[in-house]
Amino acid sequence: MKHPTILVPVVPLLALALSVGSTTAAAQSPQTPPATAPKELSPEQRRMKMLLDGIVLTTAQSAKIDSIQERYSKLMPMPPGNPADSAALAAVRSTQERQDAEVRALLTPDQQKAWDRNKNALTGHRGS
Image (cartoon, rainbow, N blue to C red; front, side, top):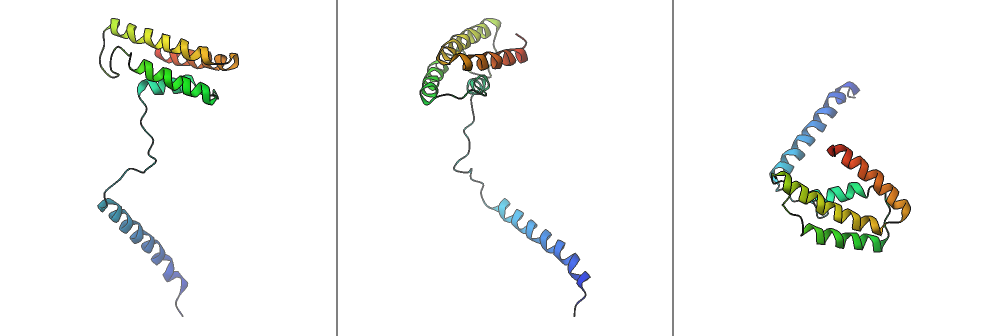
């Protein structure tokens, strides 16, 4: 009959050996992104997501907002991430304001209150 304390050190060593083996196998196999990998959001999409945070949209509202975003994404005066002068930044803000007004007009009065809170929080972070 074997002494039970002999098994105690073997179990952690076995677990370590298995984890090293699986790590090595994973490192050797090519990494493929999962089929359901989330699509990275553009800066404008992230901004809209923040503005709509906590607002439950109807299917119709969501479709109209998607259409508005698609249209305005083509109107942005400069690609995101490019350094800009103050005139270019003013043009971006003007375009955003027009888009925001269209989206806000689609919302119910209760949704507009949440939108306004989100917008105030968002613009508060920017310092405007």
